[in-house]
Image (cartoon, rainbow, N blue to C red):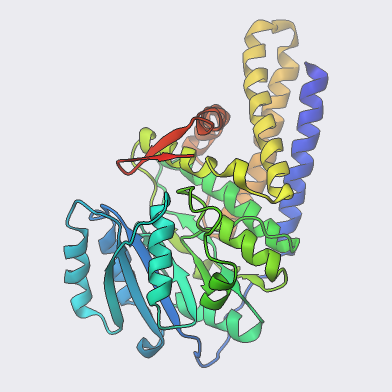
Length: 374
């Protein structure tokens, strides 16, 4: 048991060191004074988002990009609340062109159907996706534009921050998002991107159609971002960029109940077996194995009291290794993770990770009132 824990901890530490070095290797993006030229179609799929849409809509209305160079397509995915009425109300003040589309369902992935429908309608060469529960920065499109003007690009990805309070459940989600952002930054830093987030993502429409969009994975409700990244990377491995600047971050909201948190994570994890990138699978396997070992070490403290010092040391070392990496990521977003809630959430994190992993292998899962098959 002790040998097993030692091997796992060494592998985990090496993996996190690789991630830590990679996120430092990714150069920071500095704002340039250039004239905007790129045209963008912003795509926002929504379903029953009446509580979240006002924040997004207000941030869209404050975009500083020239109004002649972008448009917004809201795609209604069978909402049963007054989401559409809220959009219509706020968009009376819009200084840019917008449209509300009804989703055209033809696959098992409603969000992918919504994005595809909007891409087909778009009038500009670049598509930008975000979620209805997000807010975007004022200079959001300027960040994309300067990357596109300065470097040959087919896809540009951006950072995502979660607006978490001090509540335990929100701190857990903060921990999770920071871990995913660290891995995302690192992949781009090593020039081996394997993660991105659809809440802050831009891609060229021509590249989207060139790789046949979501064909081949539109039976999976999740993965509109990662699967598209994989497909474009295979065709254009050197034309995928990342905007590394906290001012380019899209901010999302935490889920407000444990049930929703677990359902969201199960939805994310459900695509794991279909991801082709071996690097992603290797990192995922090490992280899962380490979290399982964490649980075993915790339980062993009660079963083998004579070896409690070693098991406790394993737990402490894992916590410290995690904290160094995630504190670094939090500092990028100009935030702090030093609080009792973040430590408590860290202790519970391995149990939730294992629970989500096991449940993600079931034949179906629920999300926003609908059941999806894996």
